[in-house]
Length: 83
Image (cartoon, rainbow, N blue to C red; front, side, top):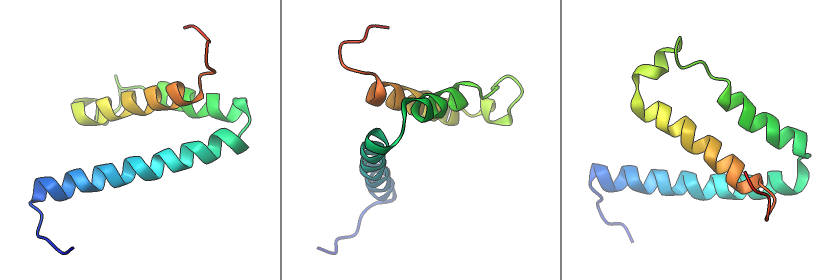
């Protein structure tokens, strides 16, 4: 199973691996963390000041933070709760 991957394929493989690990971590957090901890995870990301942060010049970083917030909120929003 040792085939040579292109740089793009290797990068995509790394991203998918990270997503799988994150899914496992979120599953554990959902079981052991109180709601306050989950809310703090999301609010810490929301409180990043992109106006003064050098990362704001990088659209990839900005999008990554937005995706992280969405992932946390989607994962931890109780079923049936409306926004």
